[in-house]
Image 1: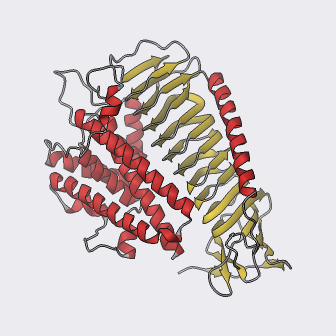
Image 2: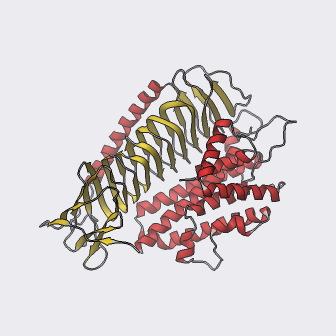
Image 3: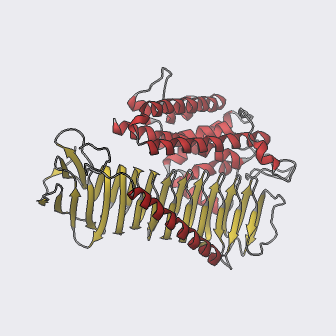
Length: 323
Length: 228
């Protein structure tokens, strides 16, 4: 049983198809959007209102429904499945968000609330978020920054990039690289099958940092004066450090343990067939800057190639030539 | 990904965690009913079959890597390494970790799709979360778990094959390439563990990758179901 509230809606139908609706909401209301295809762009403001701007063709309608404390948006069509809908939403910064879709590109900016986003194919970009932020995509790149809380990331083939995070991190990829920058966390646990792992952050006393990959390289920054026990395990690679390491407490080349300072933080770095690279923070950030620039250039070229592809003649965003 | 501590349960039972990690795990166990239940199941497995040695890998891919090693044998890189004459260390075998891994996947909903949406084959499909409690004998449990894993993967692969036309070709390609990478990682680690059965790192990697494969197949078949 649930309560279905009647909403006070201010809706304007747009002549080209689509709508512009504003809904008043009370503190504690959560937003849920499931979009089969199309973009979801979310901005935050300080009003207790949700503005829903939706672009879609004329036979598609967006239903706005408040069920209990959940405000949900759902697209329906006069006949057949709903077509593509592009949402631009402006929400209170306190509003928890649960967004997802099959073929949806999602971006959130300015939220100070929990966020959960899951896509099958489509990039996810998040600036902000608090308490718990969970982002996952099978075939989409995830870029997140400014989270104040726990961050959980899951990607299959594309890269994960997290920066300026203050909170624990759990992340996993299959083949994408995982880049963590400016991290302040007591606990970081990341794993990949073939991706490379980068950690550029502060090692906190009594913290736990675990980076495991099967066939990727690991790059881990260690600031001078850190108190950590660094345990490394390698199969066929090497442990390389840009600074002098103390003598390992283990005799094995495959598994070594280095105690820095009082050794209070636990750092586990394991790769089956890659190298482990220990660098000073400045060295790693310089390397990451170069890496990011190269990737941006590649992505720019890829976007250009995409734009050069066959145009969408029926203008319904699906490039299939039919309405 | 709420059950990342599962990988530490083996070391915890063997009293191999350092104090900070032990405290963190115990704090997590106090709050997480799922991990506490898993720990209890694993204790039961240990108690029932302390000598279980697991199954060997079917093929050896370790040789390529081994050629590049400068040491005559692979040194264990898991935490199980202890000086001779020290206390006996009993670590979970690979099948035991598989069982644990599958339970964790099931706790995350990994097997519910099969149950709720039917299955393409005639083989019986059960809730994987029942594995650790239905069969009290640990040898049977782990063997059952591995066969159930194979069965679940087989079913999901069939669903993926049957429904792949409903997904974008790029998505299908991504899923299949990723599955191949996971399979390669599992095969390499399986081959390596044949040479080094006490290697806790490899066991954890195999279990984690099997869970990863199941979850990826589940995500793909759920996407197909949503498009149907």
